[in-house]
Length: 363
Image (cartoon, rainbow, N blue to C red):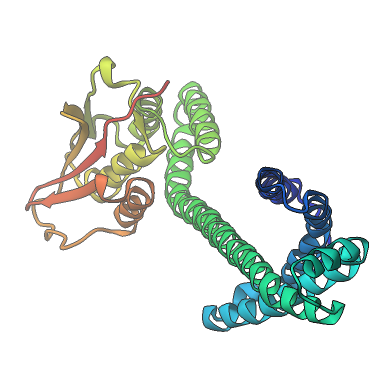
């Protein structure tokens, strides 16, 4: 990474210059109020600004150059203290060498009037002791503020990156789970259409149109996390129309979802998959056919769906969920967390799946 000694971040300069302006205003105001060597105080303050800025930028450059974000905090604090001590003495020395020669005669005359004799070297040594400590504190405070701000920004950037990574992973998992559901639906629908082609061409044509609409809806909704319930109801009805070609009168279907719930949001193709699961593992196994019901009701802030189907009386109750139901449960967990659930109830001749979602409505 190319590190510039002078930052190109406008926000950095805005904060830095604002702090300097406040400090400079306070220093000059105090010098004017005291009335002691005002010109010297003004000259020193104006010369201090660029020298102090160079010292602060030096710490920043070393911090970035040696990846200070990854250095243990104890070592980083020790480095800041040592750097500020050296930088404080350097600032004081540079100020004395650049400003004092223009005012030394006045200082010398003042000390002589007080009956004291002082060489330039002695005054420089005394001044370094006092001003060096002050400048050290300024550099140290700036260094700690910079470390704190940089560390906080890096932590926030890392957190944001992790959140984006989690969201991308979540989207990939949802897409993967959705793609696992579609092949069953695709195969069953094409199989049903194949049965009808030679028996009733017009009906087969209607089934192909319904199938194409279902497929288009599946493709379009795969990019959406949630869709309106009304769209899901329409797709279920089209799917049932295709399945009837195979089961005919063996399929007795009833759907009870009020129009007042059609604007509620649900994950796409989830209800359709529950219906498909009921037909594949239940009604297709019944020679005399059976009943499939899909119901929805609002309970407070929740939307509860119940899909029930008849099963062969000789079939053994299933202990758990098949791959389709497990995928639905995983999709719900990714979309809603603990706010959604999928429960199954299995008896000798009846199977039901209860889907509970938080009630959300589209805009």
